Amino acid sequence: MIIVLRPTASGDEIERIVGLLHSEGYESQLMHSFGERIICCDSVSGAPPADVIGKLKASRFVARVFSQRTRYPRVSRESKTTRTVVTAGPMTIGDQALTLIAGPCTVCDSETLFQTAEFVKSCGATGFRGGAYKPTTSPYSFQGLGLAGLKLLAEVKSATGLGIVTELLAIENIEAVAAVADLIQIGARNMQNFELLRAAAKTHKPILLKRGQGATIEEWLLAAEYIADAGNEQIVLCERGIKTFEPLTRATLDVGAIALANQLSHLPVIADPSHSAGNRSIVPQLGVAAVAAGACGLLVEVHPNPDTAIKDGAQTIGHEQFRSLAKAAKKVRDEGMVAEVGLEPTTPRV
Ligand code: PEP
Ligand code: MN
Image (cartoon, rainbow, N blue to C red; front, side, top):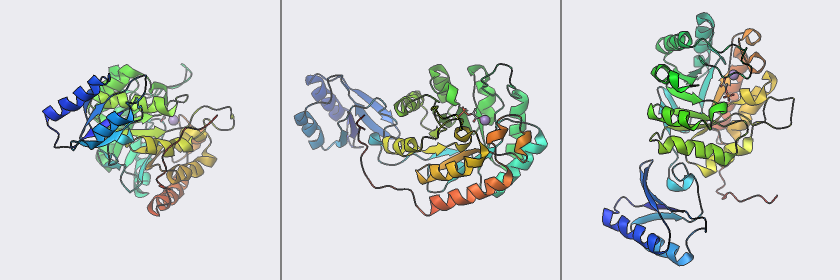
């Protein structure tokens, strides 16, 4: 249960509410979360009975009561009336405009980086992506340029004004990554690396939290809750596809998860059509589908000559493809084709 307090609620009033819950056998916790004061109270035996909820709702110090059990009170949609907008350097994520973040999978030579950065900027991108530290399935694959890669990203940033999105792979690199990144990426493989989440949160830089390849939506939101609970409320969720039985794509873009995450959380949700596709021919379609489902931004792998990209060339699109994806996706976002019909999520029957 979440009880959202009115700004007028004094310490005494809060104690009275906590006392009421306590007398009914419910332990509760006061939290300062995203500008609201909320009382969270959950019990394995379920929500408090209707008369207790009635008393809470009757209090003039209570703005709202959400009686369902939630394991992620801070990031839950119920705890905040407005949607969170994250500002990360020049990137604004979660407002009406579509946010485009694009660049190669992996930081490569300076000429290619600058060429790509200038191009994506001309298409309306405000963020440049590229990994200096790469998580690789094989230990023999290229692991990224490391510090030299971060230096190149810093040069792109100062020359173009684009915001930098780059992955934090290990706590030992946190200072160097945080010094360059405007938005720190936590990759799919680290979504449940709780120590890394807490450490990243403590940098006070905005965090891009990719959904784990095998993570449920609830696990993803709980990972976001870790970051919020560690004191960092600048969180962007990124759906990047989940593992399914389908071998013709690298992952399956979970379009439903984009819509649901928007209903369950007030955090902005973006999508990465590149890692879900694994195949560049369907990246534009997935990108547009993600925006139609409610993604407020896209993270896309782009390279001037994708076949020569150091990593993930098969899913990387060229400049012209990015131009048309950006145009189509912006049109979908601007024309408000995103369905907001006000239905509450229900539990599917299996
Ligand atoms: C990436 O963005 O290059 C990447 C490795 O992403 P993910 O963690 O989603 O696989
Ligand atoms: Mn990649």
